[in-house]
Amino acid sequence: MKHAFHRLDAPADLVRVTFRGQVVDLPAGENLAAALLAAGVTVFRNTPVSGAPRAPFCMMGACYDCLVEIDGTTRQACMLEVSEGMVIEPAHGKGADNALG
Amino acid sequence: MRSADLIIVGAGPAGMAAAACAAGKGLSVLLLDEQPRAGGQIYRDVARAWPKRGGLLGKDYAAGLPLVQALDHPGITHITGATVWQIEDGPLVTFTVNGAAQQAQGKRLLIATGALERPMPLPGWTLPGVMTAGAGQILLKQSGMVSDRAVLVGCGPLLYLIGAQMVRAGTPPLALVETQGRGDLLAAMRHVGGALRGWRYMLKGLGMLAELRRAGVARHVAATDIEIAGANRAESVRFRAAGQQHEIGCDTVLLHHGVVPNTQAARSIDIPHEWDSRQRAFVPQRDAWGRSARADVFIAGDGAGIGGAKAAAIAGELAALAIAHDLGALAQGDRDLEARQLRWRLSAELAARPFIDRAYPPFAPALAPADKTIICRCEEVTAGDIRRYAAMGCLGPNQAKAFGRAGMGPCQGRYCGLSVTEILSAAHGQAPDRTGYYRIRPPLKPVTLAELAAMADTPDAAE
Image 1 (cartoon, rainbow over the protein chains, first blue to last red):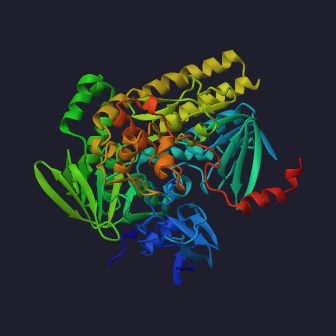
Image 2 (tube, rainbow over the protein chains, first blue to last red; image 1 turned 45 degrees about the vertical axis):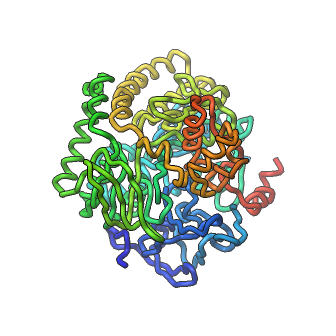
Image 3 (tube, chains in turn purple, cyan; image 1 turned 120 degrees about the vertical axis):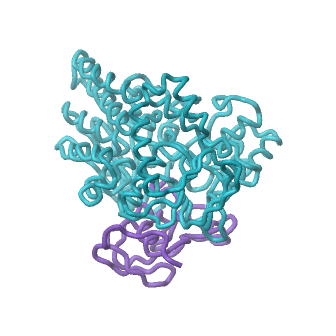
């Protein structure tokens, strides 16, 4: 499927990160949630309650739907900037320990 | 520990204007904001985005530039990436920056935490690809990203604005699905002296609608029975309009039916709030300077009641004048003289609000959602669950937490609190003021043990 979003400007310096174990090149310093959406990621995590898929909803740090896990800590992707070597996993879903749940 | 005459939470229009005004009177200001750059949401990333994309974002956005530039003042310490999670008497503010907690002591505190999108619970609104219109704008401003196949759903000036910006970006939305009826605009014009007070906004709205029409964007008004369909992500919007059933395939759905004050910080320190029936939201009680029931805590901007970015900046300045006077940096006569002109500008800014509120009322079915619709996104509690709790004797939002965890997920009720209040009020036939709202407690945002441990490690902690 074609990506849902396109960029108006060519992205700046790309750096390598991994998301769900896959290597992705994202613009350094870009908002992480935005960068993942532009890279074609549609589902950021599955909920702890029902396992339903979720992705960024508010982009301003209020809704917590874009939760990811970085270095073992649950973080809001929309409140982070891309940096080289980030290892990003979806926040724990149904049945797993959830640092925030 | 840090200290300052004035601690401001939030670097949007109210916080930025207050910081500059207070620093100009000689106060030391500590400005705490979660984002990496000043601007808040309305002027998000304006200093970086304006040179690249100013043309398509429009000149109202440029009004944020001087506010950001004015933060470059020796009296202002602006800490970016600072998440405030506790406020105590003092006022003592605890926040996290770069994974370590810190504290700051002020003589006065200004809460300028702005607005949140009014929750718009519709069937399918939790699917990936469904976002707030504000989120769509943030992606455009901050990251220069546009959705190729988006449908805009709801009502209000912000919906037209993002639609027009998308047209200018070369990717018009697929359709505008509007919820207000034709009667709403007429009522607004007739009943609130609206046409006169609101003409500037009407012209602006008409201009943006003309842009959308020229771009061939389909427009449906008075839409009902709106739902978002899709298996693992939004695939279409279904609705009825003009007596017909419609379905529009899409990747992105942007929802908006107004914004409401973000009251989390003020509520966490028990500042009294009251229901504003015109804005259909709770607002904190404060005087004409923005002073709350706690004499050393002020609230300014949309967090004190929705007035928009320009009104927010003026309210920020008024609070700063009162604070400067409190702290002996400004004589009463000078305070009142400066305030007079600000108040005149503020009332001019606010004159059109009743018109806008009446012309674009919240989408009624999203205030009283169908039983199956999820209202608490975090804990996946439905409107029917809340009604069931009400039938079992649940009177208020805090009891609803005990009945079924509504409002107890990581967002701490930000996107379900008003829905729970509305549903319980309707179920019991009582006023929202009586139903009340969630009790908000610190931490205002989730905190890790590592952040706390890092605070203990700093030499400042020994002070």
